[in-house]
Length: 249
Image (cartoon, rainbow, N blue to C red; front, side, top):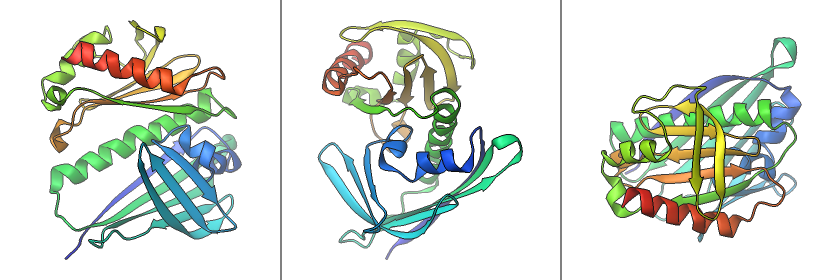
């Protein structure tokens, strides 16, 4: 038996439909605001997603540039799969409205908190999409992923992370942020996103994202988007992994 749930979101974006389409319907575009690596092959009607050693394939079910893009993942042996739809509409002043739906069938009933977690995650990612379009138009990012120690799966670990970022217990959007990561250097930017589960920092060349995942029984993680042409992903991965282990031990 599979369990169905759906996340639906609508956001206003500071870019034309064509620019939004480039961000949500091309591999390099998606990689610049969402997690992992994507390859979008419109003629073959395929999308490939890679995260570390994990790879999945999906079928493009709708391709109507620059308005509508939808794809559905291949079903796992237990029958679970995910489907995504992006509907882009022009709005006033050269802006756009994006309507997004994540439809999922799972073999397990993960519970309301798990589903709410998905919704919160999409709020953060769609905000990151808006930051990409407003502050990094036409630029591409490389994705950096690192996870904290197992002990950071506890709820009280988040306060340690916020302190390590040099932020107060109740951060405010727009406040300056400065801290140092060995092997990366000084991070000097502003807080562009904050909730009890996420923190986002924007600099001149990056969108840094920090994730609290204790409700899912998972440790804190980072998923950063680096726009600098000389960014070394492997080096950054190792540096952020070491930083998380040091501040969250």
